Length: 398
Ligand SMILES: Nc1nc2c(ncn2[C@@H]2O[C@H](COP(=O)(O)OP(=O)(O)OP(=O)(O)O)[C@@H](O)[C@H]2O)c(=O)[nH]1
Ligand SMILES: [Mg+2]
Image 1: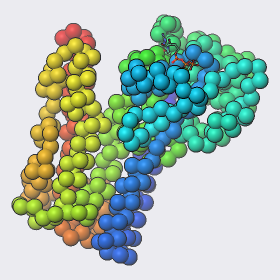
Image 2: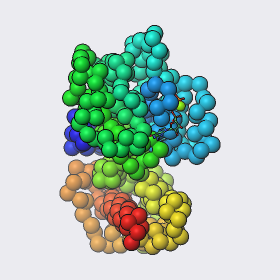
Image 3: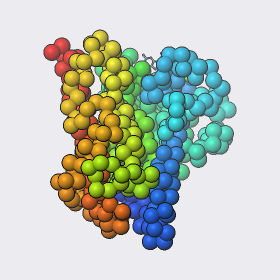
């Protein structure tokens, strides 16, 4: 399936530019106010990254699967999904805690008096990162008119033909796409023709994130995000639906920031290390990687239960170079190892060297922490692939 015309390399480059901007801010802070200013700046950047929240609008006629799609994407419990069912629309929906993505179920589209511009004004179109427009039959002229207007204003959207499980033989058939979009075949809209609509057409069983185009649809929305940090937020918050390579790249692009954070915000001296570091911060960061990659014990337990397997069948696949539950002692031991090896900064991160040299522990401290974080992301990603192939083998009955 084609993407929304967004080049993934371009999306990665946008994140690189975002990170370059952060490097500049940190360098300026260091030059103007030394370590205290650097510590403040890196905390502000952290807050900014954590506060970015993607808002995804979900719309379509009644009974097409809007609530079901949201609850599958967010892996909501049946009780929470039932609450959403009855909430007045637009209804926000997110995972408990600090949400990085909020799905909004908008009022259903339809009725003789439906007007695209009035609808978009009423739902406050500007606040959304992107739109998912669902139909379980042909898309009406009104719905395509909405898509045309979104394209005009540059808002990303996906057209979703839901309940494809009922017509699974039609999945990705060009004749079926023509049928679903027949209103456009007859007459293109000012900003939407048949070909550009086909590129944005995805086929979903809204109840099952593993089947049909559920993941490609979410990934297309991620890649079309209007800003690099919004894309990062969507990659992280919907990590189990994300392209793992994109997720890994995005996580690694930010490791120098977290390394500097650990070296200048509340660092402490630790036996065996020639510089101070905030090991607790690193433990939390590494645990965060495990969590979003879905390889913490709780996530594996849920997966194993779904497959009717004992948890150890999956947890035995974990091979990351450190114990499952990482302590500060483990982190310090790893850092001591990387430091003794005098690991250099990776080629892709050489631009950080001038700033790292100004840290109290010098370049070697920054290089060691960045290496540790990058190593953990890589190792955990290998675990993710191992678990995915184990699950695939189980499903094949091996
Ligand atoms: N077979 C199948 N059923 C689905 C799919 N998506 C939703 N359903 C079912 O369709 C019915 C309506 O789903 P909802 O998610 O409530 O649809 P909605 O668009 O939110 O409905 P309203 O909020 O009432 O407009 C439910 O019985 C769902 O289980 C799908 O992709 N395939
Ligand atoms: Mg609903």
